[in-house]
Image (cartoon, rainbow, N blue to C red; front, top):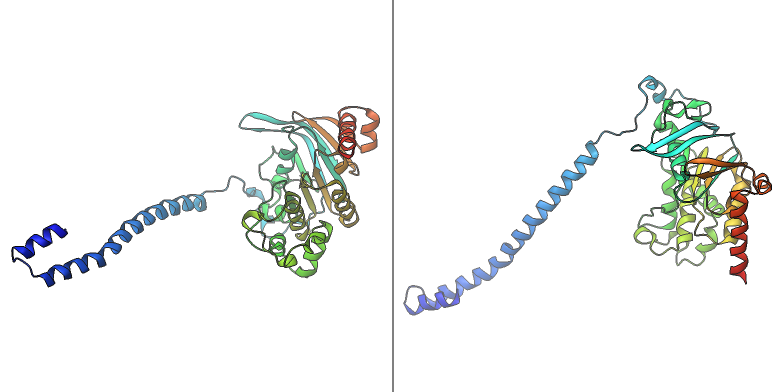
Length: 331
């Protein structure tokens, strides 16, 4: 461009001033032209992302209320008390069997524990209670009513889940815990949050945080340890004050002493709340009213902690193995 402009000046076709002016305009236009290409690319990417979001928003949920319960879905359902019953439950993912003939009954206020190797169906069993997947009709009951006939909103408001790997938002500790109280009415949120963190023994860590409960946790809780994340998840579930509390190996990253404190606080606070605990640790489930030992989707042993130890089966073997591991770690 400079060569062509200089040639035109030499030939007298343009003046030096016109040449300088043209170069100034060229510099002024260069960034808008670059930005136009960038914005065009950004718009195309945003449009593609927006279409994917619309696909999600427009997708019809696979889990819906039963048509016969349309009146109940408007508010004519009795409050859930928390009695759980599995009747010869068998379940499969895409034709692959996961649970086979599981039966158990848990009264309100009792604790059911699920123990077994990875892939034995423990997490699948508790995922059926809030209807993340629909079980076969006539196999899962709450308060003697088939969960397929319960309004989904009523069912899920009565259940809180504390997963092994919780998702934490880039907010404060308190705000992440309060997320579980979404929609709560007639409660003192500050007092409820404080109590939930005390039960989860998250309160003893707050003194080490720069701003206590108002400390930011970073992206997905990056500033917290694995045990602290799990305890925040437990506190979030407790804030919801559910009738049914599902703990999916939520204490796996918590040390034994803190775990014992949490379990003792949960037993003191549970009252009429039904609790289902999934764990690989015998120490976590030893106080449960009923323990189911699962293997390949089947219940291979059942009973209390003492009954299963007396039976001297898989549970007793797992207990001895973990006691030996603790002894070796302490040596």
